[in-house]
Length: 640
Ligand code: AHR
Image (cartoon, rainbow, N blue to C red):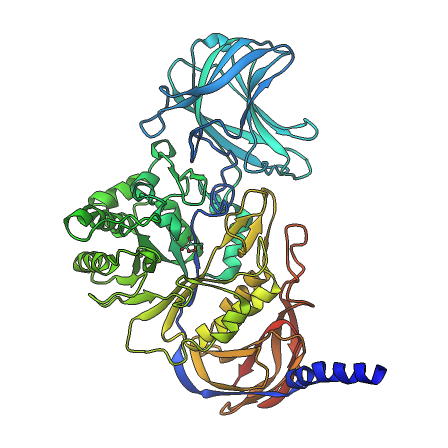
């Protein structure tokens, strides 16, 4: 009986063990360059999803600052405060507001209050408000009062659990005309936490109106209306070459009148009406077109500007021809806003918004995932956009978001033809498709992989997903003569309950902290070892889950060998560097790995799976190296 069991075990496990332990051979000839690496290969794709901007990158601490959700006017996240025996109400006044874009306000009617029984309202932030020690917070709001008798307004950051006031300031009496106020709140020594809210309090009866209430912590590069520091720093480490914006479904909108209308996202915040998104919540549009562009500027990313093509997610479309002309003109205006001199109408508008210098723009994508359009009108719509844009801007590369026949796009945003979506897959699906571009027709448009991700793990992806991603990236890299750009999606997720609409994301956060998924670190490793040339390489292995790519930095003479072992067994690899004059005997090794495919990072355990640096010695023209199970490695070899 025991013997039979043992025999069964050997039968089941022996072939797998033998297979994974077979020595693989990777032959690389650095003297034979087969193609150049696209310098724009790794970029990022972004849209308002999973509270990527509001409650994410956009550093605004106040949620629902203009009192409206996707369902309409609302005081969601605002609550009345009545201390002692004070009495008051808050509600929305639809007819009193600071602008045509925001024609409404929060109206507070105070029946009774006194210095010992204050009254007011508070905002809960995006699942709390991050408050840190010795920090200055900058706030603003619009307000008026029916009479100065209501007295001064106290503004306080208060800890939810202890009631401790982290920072406080006073705004002297409001006037009877609705005007803007600004204030600062400075914290002293305290333990950083997200358990805070923002209070507005008065001490006397009266009526007051408030709108566009805002509070910002210090932002990246101190930009007003700017971005969260920790998230920007994570993006810096990723070294993205381009930013594909503004989406995604977010570009299209659920209905035609809900698409990303860039003209409503520029200028002072008070002139931005906000809009409903397809991802269930309303966008404040604080992160609008100009902010996308300064984001590119700050991180040295090429903008890949997506323009609305006249197709919405509910499958309504605008027919090519006369009806589409205003949309084409809107795209031309948008390009002028980005690139025009200050003597042009929209270039002047950009200057008025604080950025006189034109932005660099080389690429425009028309629409998103247009293969979903059952009307079959994309071909004609794309041709109309293509011709109009090329006529004014022959220098621009135009990207088609689905295959077209009437004109030849410069770049095609490729999709998984079987799944009929962008490349959202399992690790196994990626393993099976790593050679997708090896035999791809080089005479057609160049390829953008505009959205891709291994969707394993939630809210952020796990190590198994990172292995799928890395395998896929080896295929992209080896073929980056044709695959000129690739952007993982989605980029961000707020991990708080209700924050996520799309499980499996790259970077997770709450109000206070953030972390990168194993997939994030896989991309950091690849994009930091991009190289500029692709040498001839060949992998001989019996392991179906071993993948490679090699690139060369022609300036520094460094060879970057990427190895992905997605199997549960260590994998010895015999590396043969043919044609290299001299190989330095020490090489830098970076490893991302773990014990299981399910191992992951989280907001509570943010650094469980991170790249580890070590050195390899005894490197030579031929050497054997064992890649640990479930691991991604980059070997950085100096060549003389
Ligand atoms: O990345 C999430 C969504 O997936 C995008 O909005 C859309 O383009 C795709 O279907």
